Length: 126
Ligand SMILES: [Zn+2]
Image (tube, rainbow, N blue to C red; front, side, top):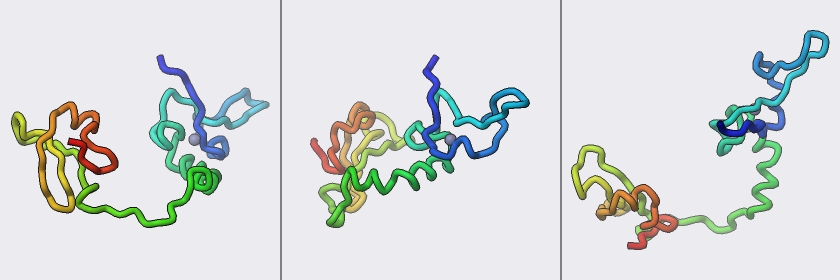
C-alpha cells in the first residue's frame, strides 16, 4: 500500500467538505486532505482549487527561483518533432516521429515512442 500524504494546497483545510471534518462533536475541526495519490499539482494537490491556491501563494517565488525567460522561445522545423502512434497502422508504421511544421514523418521503434530517447527538446537524435 502506498504511503498517505497531505494535499499541499495552503487553504485545503478551509474548504468545508464532509471528508475534511475530524474530531468529536465538542471539538470539531477541518483538516487538510490526506490521500495516497492526487490528480493535481503533479500528484500533490487534491483539487484544481488547491492547485490554484498553491500557485497563487508560491508561483511568483517559483518563477523567481527558476528564472524568467528574457527571450522568446522559438519553434522551427529543427525542434518541431514529437513522437506519435498511429493506432490503425500495422508493423513498422505504427510509431513515428512527426514534425508538426513540415508534416514530415520518420519511423521510430516502439521503445523510442515509449521513452522519447530519440528526441531532445523537440530535436531528433536519430
Ligand atoms: Zn486540497
